[in-house]
Image (tube, rainbow, N blue to C red):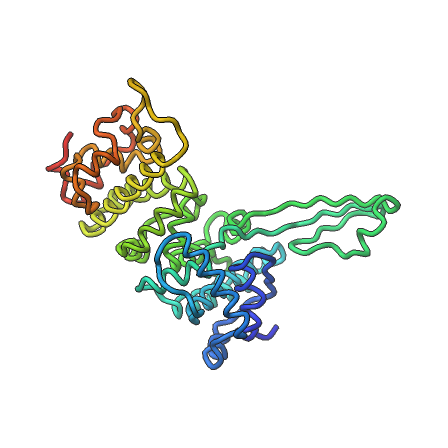
Length: 377
């Protein structure tokens, strides 16, 4: 199959991915497609406006992360990497080692061309395009009829096959396979070889190439468990991106928060530099405050005398961040948040129940940031 034009690719894959709908994956896209795409980098103007409007609306819910009025080729090329990875999840591709080698080579070449995002605009735009990648799935249909049965992977059965269901004793059963279940077919069970390459690391690299998406999908299963990368650390060093990540992560729930805290502890145990520890400490403390403000602004009744402190839910859902705050105290934590200490004391409880925040301890994070000697034991 010939490589699609940029307009064909945006129409079949990028537009439904951004707006919602049925994405079409058919074959693999080679890195040579980029040559043609660079000569004609813009899709149809009407389609471009539609995609950018939807992307802008989604990003506006996360905060002021920058304007979206175009689709740079690097974002489209990263979408092509996901297109190729999804193509390789088809059952017919599972046993074709030659095709896996080609797919790996092409995905690596595309990722090298895409490179790591360095600006707020690049980070925001890549998430605008790929922010719904975790919602992708494939619907497989099993059809039984009087003469036997048939399976249809990712496509609807022909109308003629399912016509007259009562007369022809037709029964349909559909099963939706989520993204990471699909991607499990890319992992080689046992040891990978040159003849049977593993595509798991390529998938991780594709996630890392969109740092905001990578952070928001932190609760994904192994072997794609979230880990902090230079790209994601660089992204949260920007205040606007950090705030967007906070809002999206808290909206997803406690599992995502726990995954991020576990990744932070893992990074500290591996000896992350002090600048990284400081960035991560600020990230977690700010998210703790935002979470506490959210609980205060909710519909829960105000605590009475002897009841749990207002931040009890926060202390349980973010034990690492809460433990760091308690060890530092409001006076030392306030500069990390750019808040007066009195304001911080009103946002977070002064002395919550310590038994709720013992695990995991924040000592590795505070030590990495050079603050352990000043922390309260």
